Image (cartoon, rainbow, N blue to C red; front, side, top):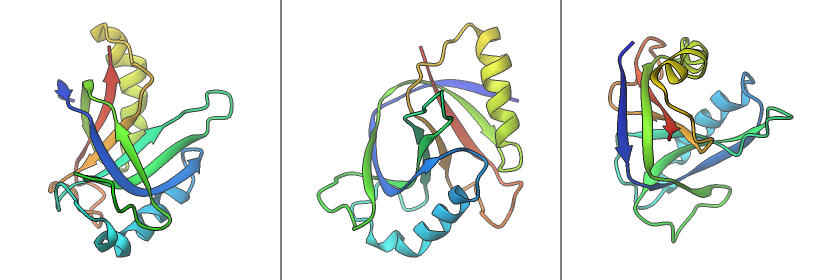
Length: 150
């Protein structure tokens, strides 16, 4: 597994939000609900990329916010039922993965790679970047997982 460490500037996304636990069917359903509403998102920064943002983790309950979203240049017109969220800039460890491997990638990142590389996670929002490499119909297509590090 090739891991990169990159600096990423802050950016803003607009999309649909779910609050709950990982492993439920709500996250795939969120993406299915966002698809037909893509045209409602104004000022998209890139037509070929989508972001899955994970933030506000409650370590006691395991609940967190997940936002299926698109990067935008402005947030003056957030569609009804959607939210805007600013992802902080900073250093990120980037792991390339697939949907069937995402759980294993998270475990490897936190339990093996970060400690061995001497990096500490910041606890800030993590995100998945779905770019032109990703095809939702192909479970083996790739996307990147960004974990903020100190």
